[in-house]
Image (cartoon, rainbow, N blue to C red; front, side, top):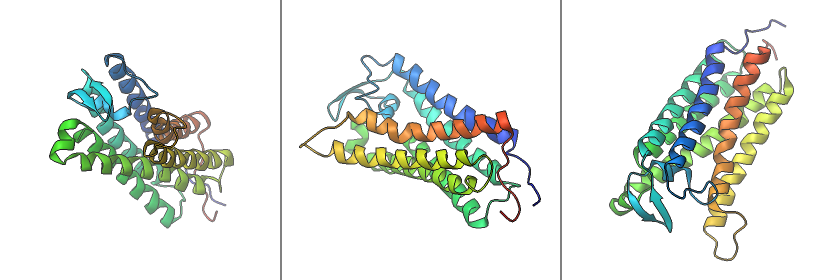
Length: 227
């Protein structure tokens, strides 16, 4: 067995920075949003420039630019880290292409979320379709990327990192499904929409932070030739 090099430090740092930027921007934007609720409000409410009511939620985000810039930065960093992660490793060609493709879809989706806020204005002019499409792309592809990475990482050391990646991705997809079911049902409401959405999104942030920290702390080797 010939061991390949570990995850590049640059890649690991990008994963961590991407997660930190997102969470810090969210917290800062939420602090300036009167009455913002992590349980009831959507994350993208923080990026809406309008002041008013949308889908029954009060919207007033003075720092909407901060959140929208963070969306875009996260997308760019996520994609860049993905490319660096597979470069020079022994990932199978299919997994490598799939992972990078999903990372690019995630990046494009989250950038669309920032460019086309989920606002009453965009609902009126029809542009909200790009917001909805972007959110779906970002959440589905981001969690799917974690699952694809996990399937590869499980064959290498430490195996728990692969298992954790798959679990996080699956939990994120479940969160999205429950958000769609719960928000469109009048018969029951298990959890507020904001909780389900964060379950779908935070799994992506948790995954990239976990991979980044593990790589920096243990110099994790992603692949071995012939594995």
